[in-house]
Image (cartoon, rainbow over all chains, first blue to last red; front, side, top):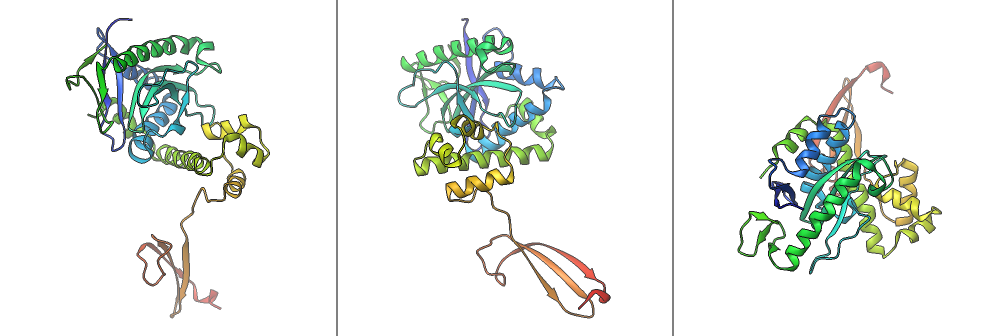
Length: 173
Length: 131
């Protein structure tokens, strides 16, 4: 996998900071690619609105990144010391919710968002539309986890930001 | 830092979608937290409700479209209210015309003569209808 930036997607909410990843040669983050694609698609626009409301209002301002909103993905990531981070997806299937957004919940206050797609099968691996974004998300997580393990990056004390070991917020992995 | 695209999407989202998502979030968090508090697994809840564990899993992941009946059943098994409806109180003021005033109290625990009334709606009742 090529180098990517780990950067803030939105940290303006009261309770949660959302990070995302952006391939080094791209100007658009993976999460914004997801947002643009489905905002432009009438079939999924309302579902996307529900998802964004869940992220920024329900999680960001009311409940935090509560575990109940996240399902564990088929490939469970190894737990990061000391927190129990998990790759998964935003669980929002009320009812038959058509989109999946892959993510990595680090804590109630810190989530990394990736890309996703329309849900056409029971699992990401079975779905043609989701297989590649899911494989990609797992690759991102492996690189991020390794960086945490090697102490190249760390979570701030208030769990609202990620920096490198020198305190810089610009992170390339 | 605000994500401009996401906030644009938020602004374009109808209010009822925000309200629905807010209620969904409150409900699933409340159920999840009550289960944690009681030390119950989803299997425990499933047995009490005579449902399968996979059905309970669907409930908690939002795949189930809750009805008032299913919510009532959950409330009984969990022993706690999951939803609360604001209470109103009506009283009648007698004069040459009868006026119904409906107040919504912001705090149901405060006695009615001390509470802060957040809204009122006057309705003039025709004299012929007064008993």
